[in-house]
Length: 287
Image (tube, one colour):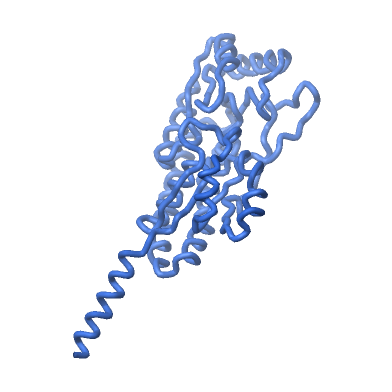
């Protein structure tokens, strides 16, 4: 009888474990989904607010998204612009919601003005650059805090979260070294972009981004001519654009310098491969 009871208890424990619902986690952008799933595996279900092709600069959550988000185990925010417009309302209307800020422990930087110069109005302050995930070293910091929060929410699977974290951490170390070796010959060189998404990437790998647009504003005639002069002086022939932003002025500038447009996506979900794609594209933009 003792053995039968023991078997029943083990069976009950097993069925309770396998039938446990995964943690419901909301994130702002697709790269975060990649991070959470790499650490959480089968123990998490991740939903993303900003879908492919949408811009976190202008995104507005739907009422149904807000309602579902309020019932999730965790909202993993990252500091993209749309969050600031409604996060206070979310916390006020749903004071029990669990939040984790991906910026915790990350050294933040300021956004550069267009072309690295002040606007024609003389305004220089651009605000904090939210694109922290574009430096793999930042992601290593981020996933440490994420691991700890997943363990706090779901201690039964702590060993899995720790193992997944250690594996992903080493992948990020290898990725950073791979990109560093690829871009080492280009140390100090500038690359031109439409939207200034690439500051953390540039800082991490010894490059400089020259942005056409900043604060959602396209450059006036004076700054546009300055950008053309900079591109010609630096022999820049490629301008990097994103599908989330217009291309009219980037195309005009490319025509003026005899260059071309190349699309990159800082918001792609497949983080490791996308970072390799970004590095190869930027590395291949130089003569």
